[in-house]
Image (tube, rainbow, N blue to C red):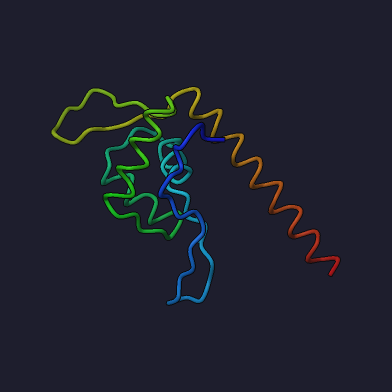
Length: 118
């Protein structure tokens, strides 16, 4: 879990009225998932998230999540070769992501099992 008030202002689930579906869009997990593949700068993270999750994060949401993740010690900036600042996931960030994804996997497994039994 994120410590303290690190999730303030984040809309975790949201309802997409254009597709009539509920979308899980926790920006911190999306950013960590993107960085698990390798170092990226903000715009590349935003594009990657849109590709793999179908969620378009605005700059305020993205950089708010990046700030919170840095404060938690789960990501850190790395040397930039250009004006764009790349970030990397830390060992603690990988551990947190693994724990959160395992919890989501358990939730999905339980939900699917209950649907089969309904």
